Figure 1 (cartoon, rainbow, N blue to C red):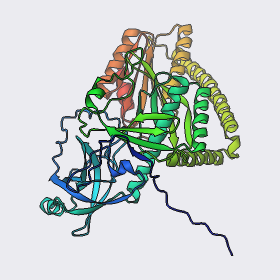
Figure 2: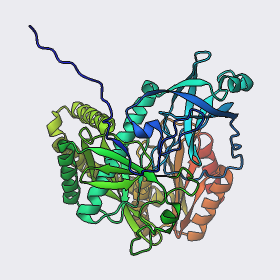
Figure 3: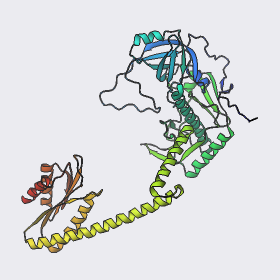
Figure 4: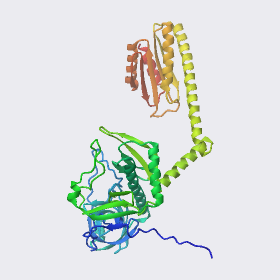
Length: 507
């Protein structure tokens, strides 16, 4: 008989959520909304679906969109934009859709009204005071019919759906990882977390800490975190009644520079519940977010460097981290980049660093050869022009030279020509005025051509430059015997060249 295994669906342990206050109870009356802190999504973070009751429904009064170009206020939580269309604000007795809070973004999901079997998309959930408000899209714009469908007392099924669950699992993974990381940083290195950001998937999230970290410090924290992950430390939640007076009187710790560590409860929170998230033997931290029941699957990866931030009065650093689905995405993306690079360089993946170093060295040598050749060519061009100067026997030798050059820095070569010409002309004792121009081979209306004016008389050089600005729209300036600028658009030899020649004839 073949062996078989039955895998049970993951469930939240019964001791995950604990009410530690003898006087606190979760409202069971269907006409009473359960406050944020005691919601089903916070009692059982793995619950994806729930049958519940409608408490209230109103048309959403969204603030008008800004039309004066003012910048939006910076938010620490990535919140999806509410669509500019009719929305309902619905309060339920209970919900599995988490309203944003604790640095964790809102869930999205679906509500099915049992009376008509219609599905309604929840585009966002927010906490208003003590209660979770669901923002529901009205697809046909019929607000009156939608409000009737959400009549108070009616029954609904609220669920996350696959997309909503994937987002929730990602948020929980990163949020619980942040608690683990912050606890180890503070207890092992005395580095409190000043703030954190749960960035958009799949980017790494980060914690902000008072200083940068060495690679060895980062690796030691990562090793310790993953040792605890391997042990499978449990995560639990304790809730009790909130003593608002005691909470307001509590002073959050500060750094030497006066900056506060962490955040107090929001001023508009009226739920009366204090919620503490516990990682067994590691951390105990107030938080309203959703957290996994165990850290056993939170393999944590820390990017092996910190990003220094400089403010007016303080310097801090960001430490980036990733875990769960984001870690898989990071590894997949990184492997793809390495594999593609190896294919381009015609080598195996382990040889990529060495091969890249070789390519960089070869490029540096090639760039030096180009510079040397340009220098030789510039001297040759200068010699030819000096020969022409001597044969011309003019009081001042004037010349426009145009080149077609697709180099990334065409002005650099023009400068090399000007240096060689200036030295040769000075040795010949001849007065001169040159205009060098360069344009790319393929031009469009957004192309840039460069112009360099130089000569033996500073005043004349400046006047030629000013004429180029007025007649061709060249933007530039100069000092002494040199003036340079840029021309935007298509440079035609039968048009712009003639303008330059005419300018030179006036001097």
